Image 1: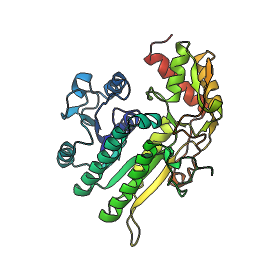
Image 2 (image 1 turned 30 degrees about the vertical axis):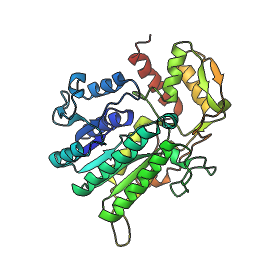
Image 3 (image 1 turned 180 degrees about the vertical axis):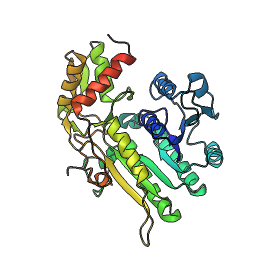
Image 4 (image 1 turned 90 degrees about the vertical axis):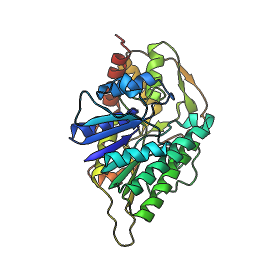
Length: 341
């Protein structure tokens, strides 16, 4: 199977590329390597995939991996660049597409809304158009638990109403789900949307809570705890997320009479933890107690998330990494990456 993975230099995209390579698939990774966060981390991820920074910095040029020359190649490009995207699809003849590229971050979407519409809406439209014209067998794309907004019913089910997003980021992800359904209906393209729940693990983004907390603790700075700590999240380790994505890829929705080949799954741990319990695990593995600054809830944030994962469990999904073990894996990587003794 030949798969295009967009967002390949990103946190989840990088891990999914590695997984597909290990499974024996051919992978083309695409990323624009924007500066939303430290680009050095993005280039370091690509280096782990056998693509040097000097290679990855070249726009619109396909580069083969030195570590996996028959399995992985990378191209730096924007999803908004429809012409380059169409040329790529025409040249590479992909079987499936996994769209993990997006402008991430709930809070940043309030500060820079136009970036989110350009990347998450226009860019996704270009992906859909390419899937339509180049007969892609299955598109799997990233949505987010943020679409549930301030939903009070728990756990969050794919059948719940998600018509009231409270951040522009969530609104763009909901729009992706609607656009995907429309293209699946009109052109009979199998599509699967995945709502990710608070992903964490090695090589994670620096704007994620676990990274922010670990860095602040290591530098003896206070950590910011919002809503006075009265929050809980369905923290999900990256290996569980990757396994869920792969299961979704293998279970292509089938078009039958009157049924659109479109499906939607939550991917989470299914066992929410309090924010303070999460902080305690970080402190334990860092070997230091955090200085804590308790603050009010931030705009666009929600007090809790909790995934109902029964939909994907029917296809074999099972979350297997608990908080203490997952946090330990992250802190081990964090200390190594930042050369902390």
